[in-house]
Image (cartoon, rainbow, N blue to C red; front, side, top):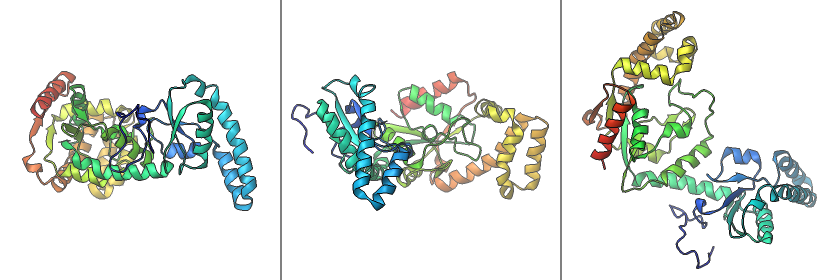
Length: 361
């Protein structure tokens, strides 16, 4: 695909496969012409869903296509023109003739063409993503296997509740490059890590969001992130990123138990209000911790001794589990520099973050 000489400095998405379109953020509007359920599973980071046919219409056309291709296309085009017409005034009319647009569908075929032809008739410059979402998905997978190899990762390890996430956020405020995997995954990464009111993205959309973050990093500067297992909730990390994390020497973060319990009260306030609910979620750990320990947790929860419950869950399960995992996953774990947080107060964490930013600049 060739672009006008008047835009020679506009970057192309070129890592590691060539998508032959401009950087997504260059476009005034990115249109996903697929059905809503396809869009929900995954879509380009900046895309707006303007379906040529909705889910029911898509199913109807697909069913008809098996018996009568001509009739299926007739129905499909009828639905398409009506749906496109509905979007012209409320959305498309807000853009000027100088705005450039990108359109894609599943393979860059008929649904993209319907939108592109109409937009070009209006006078817009329109690019169609070659190969559509299917080609984009190949590009995402290939990029996720390549980019982490070129990043300088700084991994924060440490037991649950020691303030790693807060330190990570403070590093971001101090101007450092931060990869918050748990935020992207909408999960805190443990059996009880689900965030109330938030569902996790699909695996494909997690990959999209992760790549969108990775591509913004400067490989000449460090990227800070927390140590994570292969899975965060229901989502899998790319092998290349997981392997790259474990090739580093982590920085070990620790904090006093009283501070860790206080952090749990803040971050897991829903479990402070419903400790029995938390214990029931931890019941699958019985083969690991034993029936006697699980019974102890239930008793503490029933008595409302939340602080003691939080402390015991950490010391009897999470701490030893994390220690074993760190020793197994990080060859240099024994040599890890120590970051002692005597307090998890924001001002101290900010001070530590500034020191780390200076040290690893």
